Image (spheres, rainbow, N blue to C red):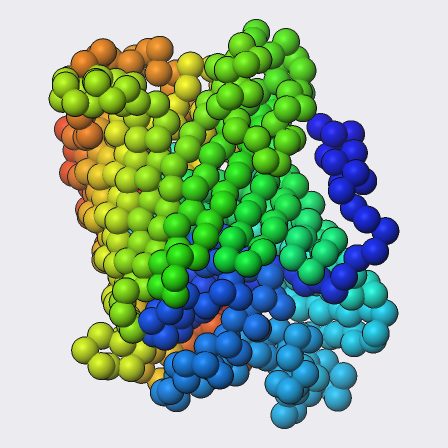
Length: 558
């Protein structure tokens, strides 16, 4: 794998590089603020294709500057605060917004609002910030404390403004909410972990990559991080739910078209890995090759098409070889997969965004795993008609109330979608690459966000999910780690089949920014789970208070 990746880099990397930038880390509130102003403008801003995340910092600055100059969307006090926040957070790409602190610490620390220390030279740019996330909560189900204790550092920079680098390192101890153990045996969003005290987990997170532009319109990144594809709160195509993983990313943005090619090395399903203990040998690998092409049509509509293939070299079909054909950035994966006599897990589909009028955006996704049109028309519920759908709407400044935003979203996935008959399910470290519930579910999402004053964000989220659970020896199609060969029925398959489980999840969060990227947050979670199985039939109430610094909020919304 490493030889193939470095050969690919050397082949495509010319001797001359142009100015580049690192990414703005995936962060729910950060990206909501970014996209709300494009929706408020009622047009598609060509600087950034919002379905592809994360976005590079130089593109981010050009994006918000375009919206400010052309559309005048930063109208309220909170809007202007957000605009200044983006400029200060990315000050190296907009010298007009200096980001200077009024009172640096010891005259040397926090001279810039966003950086603990920095270096600003023509040949070297460096930003270093501490990372902290501490908090406690009461869990009604166990009458014990849930807690989080994260310490670390974030480093980003550039060399000669041609090579960018990013590193994020944290040491973490957590006592998870009790309901997490009902859904997964691991730590959501994370890989390997160890036991902490009696009921907690201990893990180390490292994310890092290098970045370089080879032309004005094409950039490469190579490292270990997450990806999110789509305009919705969830993604049925490629989400940031699973742990960070090794990736090689190439992105070309030309005219009205954006084209993303990405190769990921993932960790295959392994029972020992799920239990969080050392197996005495390397965890098995799997790989995913991913294409996403999107185009702006007119000033309001964007449509994207994707295909992906998950494959495991160490299986009886591939004979322990890495198929170099999947390194081709502009080929149709399904054709290659079939030509090589393989049965790798290939998916394809589309996503769209329509900024219909100022303040309203419609979006959606469609994922096809397998299907036969005649079987769909028959209506008999054939097991291999596997697909997932999303539809949503965002309404900005509801009824003219500044900074009051609403998002409604529907997601569904038929039984056995994303699963496979080998170890090539659509997963990483036993966690879904798409939706946390895997498959065999439908879900309604409602999110209200309100920023009444510049530094205060109030967010209420409601998730209503209906799915079907398995008992021992069953496979009703929800657990994507199980081979679809063990399916229960050939026909008569419907969403939610199996042992009924209805989950109502409510989250209210009040977040106040004390200083740049330093937040104090109060949270109330109410989760009600009703099921035919006793292990899923429980209720949880969690009240917590946290402080976080230069790190996104952790969520377990399932």
